[in-house]
Image 1 (cartoon, one colour):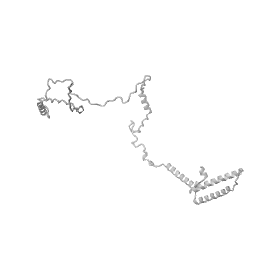
Image 2: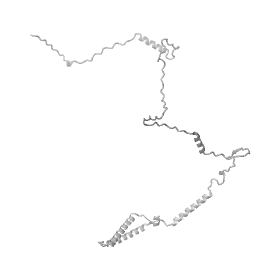
Image 3: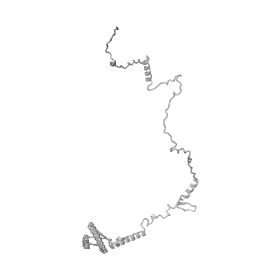
Image 4: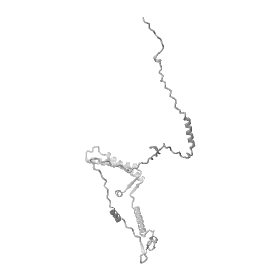
Length: 262
């Protein structure tokens, strides 16, 4: 027989927490032992010539000779681009097309100047007079020998023929007004009394025609009966139309046939 050893423990893999890996500590920074001395020296050298500068400019050492790309550099200022051609160039012609060449116009300036001189109006010569035999000329306008029309007695006044013409037109206008006043008026106004009497007369005529129309026989078997009936109907319709126009229009004017035709 074999003997089995059994060990009892409370460990469980689900209870194990995952811890983040520990970061190794950073090494300490390097500090030179001459750090404080360098700081003091630089501070003292800066304060010595902070405002006035060096009393004597120190010469560069032999090792500090001028090397390539070590001199002063100047920044280039940006300027606006200059465009010589303001318009677009024409497109390149296709192989099937013939290139269009601009034909320069040849101008003959001699002929153009001759044309201008011929077409120009000549200058007016100023009036002059000569008072001596040798030709001593003077201005005629300022001499007082030319008549000045502004000094004439009739200058600025209306001529007599215009005044006569004005009188004739006024007399002709008065004559036309008198002739129009003597003529009869083209239209006459019907007063209210005449309108009432006219309306009564039309109604009486309508009653008479209505009686004649009612007295017609019932059978219109002949042509004269048919003509008479149609004539009475037309007269009745016309009278009814006239009565309506007079009743609806309180103001009525009558025009002469002659003036109406004109």
